[in-house]
Length: 470
Image 1 (cartoon, helix red, strand yellow):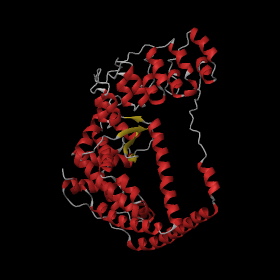
Image 2: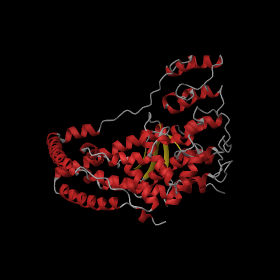
Image 3: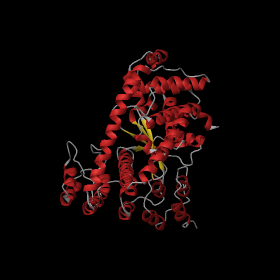
């Protein structure tokens, strides 16, 4: 498929303009020490904010894998292959408090798609084609390298309305690509309607009337709100994707030109004033902050330590864990209290003991009275958590408690396969191999550990695993 034919003209046009503006801005900033400081500050601060945001998603979101929603994971693989992506991106689902949305992002060259839970619930409403359109739309952003381009075009985002115009062009392109790859214009239009009114009421919407509603809207603020937005108005997107799939021209939505000119003049004046004020502020900061203060600021360490929270109605055993009372824990275990009880968090005390490195001494006590293959409310085993949060010692404790080095779990994964799946440390992989883990054994799963590492392009791990093939 010739993907070039799917690119919307507005994306190409505004990309060229944004490139010119960005290059000129970079050249201008390079001639000024203050400009270089401002640019560096923006880039570094943006990087750290993005990193923390993604870290929160990776810590709390549910990752779509062969274990979690395997049918949808297969769909991710298929679409990624059809689009020619070099690597299947990570897909996470996060709780959204009713918001219907999804987005693609990137950090350190690794792409990620995030689906909000309310949009992912379409999978339960017989709307799998609509959900597939949403997924394909985000994969199209990755295929078009929109995240990387947005970083390179950062200066253009400070030019009035330009960054938003380019972004809207990208959205049109991704709608086209998604509808084309799923070959279902009705699902595409449905998905966009769901974004407008929700997954229950969209079936009652007259889409033609919805599009005409925007055609008749002549307010300056309705027009201007779209120009400030990174996404086109939903009626326009619906009309554009339906027209593209039919091979016809989309409608022309007329703008109130008199109101626009007056409003733009005022908005431009306010925008320029704000840019001048921000530039002056950064210049003043650069003048008054000396090197000693900067060194002190950069040397500050932030505490990201894990803090366990008690359940609303904790058991005595949980309270003993919370207050680090090992003797009381032993007494309660001997009386028969269960460390595999599911807490309000969905974890067991054994899982919590692995997450919190300061409380791992409790794990050995619990394992004397509980099954080492216990899972939490999300289906994660103790070994899964040991590979993510623990150390070689943690893994050793669990294997010593009775888990077979080449036994398969409920998902058909051996410990070594799970370690590769969760990107365990090299020390843990080495430990498993030295204790008899077979890198060529697939258990009851589809891949061997070596094949799984190759799938994730973890080539150093592939070399390590292959060194233990005899």
